[in-house]
Structures are given as C-alpha cells and as structure tokens.
Length: 253
Image: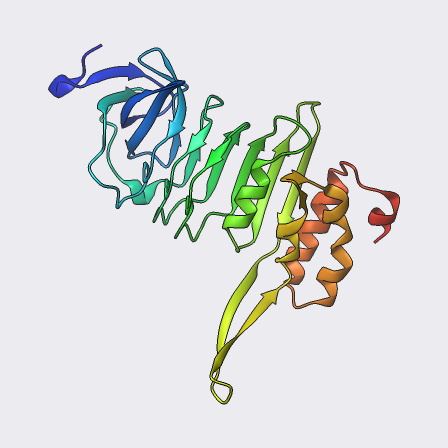
C-alpha cells in the first residue's frame, strides 16, 4: 500500500517510519523514527522477517539512514519523530543481531523487551541510556544467554524478568556498582576502585549461561559490602516470591 509522499505503508502494532534493507536471512532495520513512547518493531517488512537492527538505528545521533523507508501505521495520525521520547522498545522474536550503538543517547529509554536467540550484540548498544533499568527476556532455554550481555553493558541497578520455555519465570535484581579512577599524586599513578555490591553479580555466568545458584550465593556478601538496603530487599523479595532453583540453604539466608 502506498503512503503519503510515495512512501510504502503497512499496518503494525505501533506507528513509526523505518528504513530497511535486505539481509542474508531477511531484513535489517537501519533506522526508526516514532512519536510513540512504546515502539514495537514489526516481525516482517515487505514479507521478510526482521532479523537485524542496524548500527545507531534508534539513536538521535544516527547518520543518514540506509535502505528504503516504510511507514508503519497503527490507527490514525502520522508516526511522528521523537527518538528522545521513546521509553520502551519491543524487539520482534525474529531478531538475531543488534548493531553497534543501536540505542546510543536514547536518554528516555527505560525498558527493553526481547526474545532469544539474539546471537550477535554490537558494541555500546546501550551507551548513554541512563534511565534503562528494566528488561523482559523470553529465554530460549535455561541458559538465558542474553542476560550475560545486558548485565555486562550496564552498571546501574537492573530489574530483569525472564520467561523460560518450561513456563517458569524468574525476576532478578542486579545491584548497581561504580568504577572509579582516583589520582594518587605522590605515587604518580591512578588507583582503580569498585564501589557498590553489583560487580560480582555481573559474573554469575558460566560460558554465558546464567547460574542461579551462583547468583544466590552472593547475597550474604552483598549485605557485608556497601549496598542499598532497598535494593537488597527487592532482590530477596523477588527470589522468594518466584523461587526458581532456589535451594533451602539460599532460602534460609
């Protein structure tokens, strides 16, 4: 269907204009503009599965987009263009690759929904996404490998909900930490310090596979270090409320 100004138009779940180009396994979305707060990327464009999100695709600072424009309409009105107003993004289950700096400077982004497998994550995907805290992941198996990437990229407190193929769920809090270089003037060098309790929680993965046993073992250490008591309470509450693989010993702790 033809849209205004000669741009092709398709129906979707949220209004946007996207640019796309063919990829070996489907289509790559190279840029997205939308005036909506929650953007749901389509599973298909022009009959092809959307398998890749290009470099800087959502970034307000992206270069001129590659490929062909396509207007996705949902109800009436124009799609709008306010990348700094996008608060949530849902990637389609067909997505396999996310390019470098895909959400760079998306300062209002608060949550991301995705389904595994996303096999290839670029560099700095969430750089300068200061409000991004909430992730909803539909895991392919118990490994929940996307968590390994997400937690390694963000040092802020993260609130992650995981849906597993067996119907089970988990809600995990990853506490905040800070990396600080402090000048040691007499010794003419900088000292590296870690503050907060969140750094060990970024290492509860074995060959990118989530280990809930390792996650639960960290709780006593969290309480012994500098920590946010409210964060510790949230972490404990969610593990007790949805106790997937929670041992009796960890429950007691």
